[in-house]
Amino acid sequence: MNELAQALNNSIKEDNEFVYTMLSQLGKEMFYPKGILSQSAEAGKKAHRFNATIGIATENNQPMHFQHIQDMFGDRVAPKDLFPYAPPQGKEELRNAWKQKILADSPNLNEEIVGTPVVTNALTHGLSIVADLFVDEGTPIILPDHYWGNYNITFKVRRGATVTTYPLFNEANGFNVDGLKEAIQSQKSAGKVVVLLNFPNNPTGYTPLESEAQEIAAVLKEAAEDGLNVIALIDDAYFGLFYEDSIKESIFSLLADAHPRILAIKVDGATKENYVWGFRVGFITYASKSAAIRNALEQKTKGIIRGTISSGSHPSQSIILQSLQSEEFKVEKQQKFELMKSRAVKTKEVLANEEYKKYWTYYPFNSGYFMCLKLNNINAEELRVHLLDKYGVGTISNNSTDLRIAFSCVEEDDIAELFDLIAKGAADLQK
Image (tube, rainbow, N blue to C red):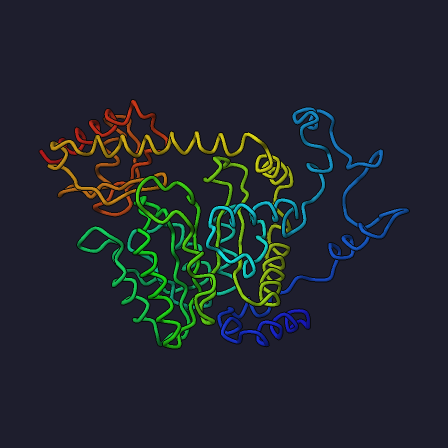
């Protein structure tokens, strides 16, 4: 094993051996090399005469570039913030700005135990890094039965995780805390589990109530007290889009310092929160009382980034940073929130139509981009195809019974027509 990896492992073990045992074999072997980038960073601070280190070209004391590309940005973004490589961990100003955003969004989060976010190429990349660092063949990952299908590729196909599911909703149409507890206990012999919590949930659009969130945290803490190492992976892709009575902070706040055997990891990003899907800017944030552990995990994360994509998009990071610092950010974010909320409210109003009960019920939703219909004696994939072919309506079939509707991309005035057409399609198939 590389001596740098061993040094990181030792620093983790010295402060919390449970966290060390959570690492995958790849995670234990990972490190950030003292290679070209670290030497270039040192030269950037000290080479006052000439800096002939990193593999870019310069001209007139700035990064060489095509003027027609710079003209697209004008003087809003300087060449130094567009054309050079960003650091593997991301622009330091952006990392610090996103940390301050996390702390502002979750006032109950203890700043002293939260690391500085590492920039990723959006959410999926962040999740895959966590999978690389903590998942070996056979590692159990606990998911609700309603989950984003890409988790299968990220955790099961790529890393060989064993997926264990539990019903997301209980009989009272609330979060199924007992089901989560049973799923975790069923994997107790494994020694460690990854519990993935995605709120607002994709595909159902459900976020737990405050009381439910407290119960979820208690279940994870109980498992830790029983000797199970728990990687609490928080997928906050749709964070902030909370329309009704639910938690308004990330559940990361409740888990960040819950128990020495619980490692809380928050994966989030500007992607969906700030409506910049194509910019591909996400973040991984680790929580630990130990600064040494936070540093070691960030170094291992940097190592994976260096060994895969090398670094993220510099223009995207610069634009997101300017956006976060702008006076318009909070105003426009609130405007878009109100627009999204109005679509969710309208969707519930339309779904109250008694006629629709012949064709479906729907799962609880109070947040996010989506909601899901549970069809009555109609195959969801057949209905999806029929709606496309006959009515020109696009939906997503999650399984044989569930149809996901993204109200996020339907104008409020069109929502009633959308569900009328879905009902017509359902009626066609029931004949």
